[in-house]
Length: 587
Image 1 (cartoon, rainbow, N blue to C red):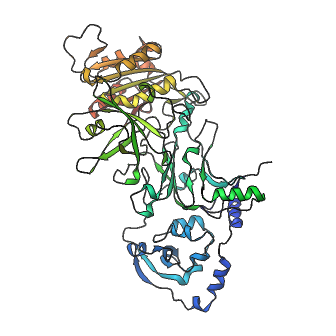
Image 2 (cartoon, rainbow, N blue to C red):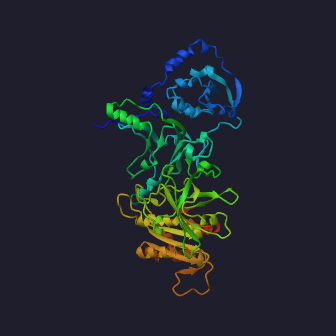
Image 3 (cartoon, rainbow, N blue to C red):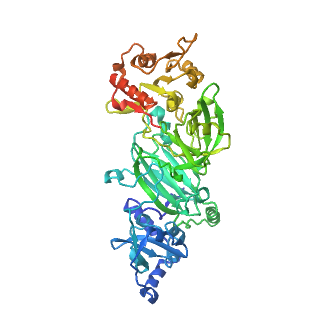
């Protein structure tokens, strides 16, 4: 009979009292907390006089080594600074976990790991009080994160998680998510795109060492991210390739396995020979963040921790167009990072002055370019992304991307976006059921076509990993460009229209075409207007219908320059389309 996974008593005091009891009982001293209590009664310790110096954050930061270890902790109503160098050898979790917060305010880490421990145990080691000039500080925040100002109601919705030790000595992180709006059954695989995991290791970072060796886990719920970050002990590294996302709408947890190559393997070897299962680690690290934050929070493009390094796998100019196709990939040891549909990212590289330049781009599906399919599950690419970049001759960013060759390096940000995972569905019926829209209208101007491509791919080919049928939604798209030279993927989309003749229609509109259209031209001239929208959107099964008759059952997707978007919104309003049925892509 398999042994039940064992909770590891270390990082966060669990939400319920039973878990708290398990953690407290399993905690084992390293050198001996009892010996420290004996030391507290010694003449040497009793002669120590607590200090009252005024200590700045900068002064505190200097004391961050094993031989000189200070940290700030709340004590008697004030934020006190303690020199815990002499206490460190007695700490039950070992000195290494203390070094994780050396030279800094450790209030939050202490509260989460030691809710039941009194700071009086090191009271006489006080050096003074921490002086702060800008209010309470938080650990440096990662992309799309904000200080935890959430209300009590929101806090109760945070996912529950636990570290567990299995019978074979492997450590796993289990996350149990609260209820959120799932994608409808034909698109249930989209739930696999909710979570990203990023590993910031000391060897890969050029930033200060206090900002390295941490594991970030971020999950899209409905309109918020759940973000938590752990600082792991140096003996642990995450095995990101073992990450298991939500595999279906019926699954309510994700798992991330951790490997301990130098120590864990030895313990497994010893256990297999002795049959003992008593070697349970007392600690694996500390919690830095566990918060909910809005999905529309701004990305800090000035922070190196907002980006991960990637390399160019493929770079080719699409013949006869102004677009370059880029296939980018990052190390499987640095990030598991699929992009939710409707989300974009920032690409960043250095210019000729060695300064950074960055621009937002939206990933596109690989299927339109003959690339091989992902190996993990359909349309889930956690280690690569594909882009269509429109190259402007006098642009700042696009010429640099146009010059990239295979194996060149640049940086890519974490996914950015305010779109819920299930935005391609509507609530219908009594009681309300989450189901695909009957029709999707797409209005794209110029490079605004890029976010539409994954929508098309998902609807036409988006069966789940279980082989469920594609989504039955019908697609109607109008592509607005200035000239024929600005068009992209004309042949590819034409072939799709032929293959899915009853489910996809595409109208090409040029604003500066020649006065006389060539014979067989597959586009019309003009700009966005009510008449052109009627021509390009009321097609297929909607032919002959009035806009008001389909207003409630249709999703509108809009992407283009601000003037174009404004006109598109005015047309949608004129067609009596509810606000909830309209999405304007950003980025």
